[in-house]
Length: 205
Ligand code: ATP
Ligand code: MG
Image (cartoon, rainbow, N blue to C red):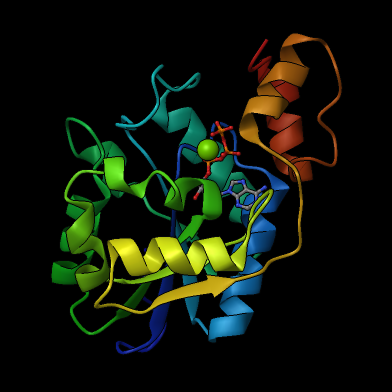
């Protein structure tokens, strides 16, 4: 159960399909945690992600299990099942509303990668997001801070969007799934426990 840290603490939220979770997710969360002095980072696997053209490759429960395996050794990282319990598409705005009403004293920082920020206009009620949580955009791929500032100014002129350069790790879940299908190793792209579970259960073949 999240919420062991003091009531008013700063909490990072990292949403994703996590299909599967990989080391770049963990590393970016760790760097944001340190840079912003977050007490915890809560990882939120999407139930039915509204933006993917296709359904996730694994059911929610299996993706959640992999996230839990990945986080088990970090005392400040937790997995939330909030989006799996809500029927229908997982809209970030609804998740933030629910978390704010459950934890009214927390200060939430919603973390997303540059690729996701470039598509944020397609998110349900995206204009409300910076009112519900501070937005923290981390670099990914060809991140340009000039372009990032322009995009933030255009979309959210009245809010501060945080940008953070994180260690560049060109790892994606798409590439991990592709490697599995091609019979290639995914060792060291995902945490050891996640690697073992994927191998043992024959996932993504
Ligand atoms: P897929 O290829 O299936 O889209 P993904 O690797 O992009 O998977 P997601 O679950 O879609 O993983 O990502 C969750 C969040 O983490 C998004 O905000 C995304 O931008 C960010 N993210 C994922 N991988 C990286 C990475 N290598 N560097 C920086 N941010 C990342
Ligand atoms: Mg993605």
